[in-house]
Image 1 (cartoon, rainbow, N blue to C red):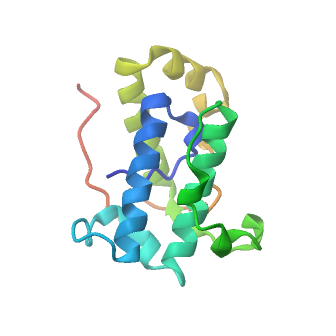
Image 2 (tube, helix red, strand yellow; image 1 turned 180 degrees about the horizontal axis):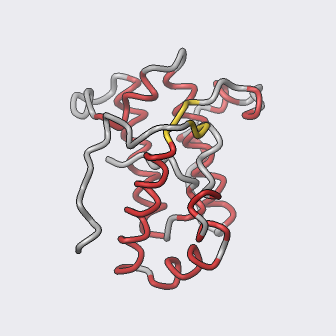
Length: 160
């Protein structure tokens, strides 16, 4: 399970579909509707919020919004709109994510894209994401100083 901090706009189709499925699984975990993945490291930051399901639904909505922009037909009924409909995302307390984590995720994604979707890789390189200091994150997050998050299972992808 990977719940990307970076904006879903940087993902290729395969990555966006996987993120949708994995976030739906994460939602089931937080709702207590599955026995597995209860202690998955990717859920730590959501569990630390005042309302984990609220934040996960907001996160899921951002994925849905990106899918709609691309012409995909994701099932919006999977999102609990009752929880998020009266919220303005700019007014919520953002989940803090370290600069090191964002940088790691960007580099990790780009290594994947270089192999499986060179067109998306090139598109990302040619936009402002080419400047690592301008990486956009999912709007529920706020970038703060720091290294890779302690919960991250770091993979050495740089030499593959």
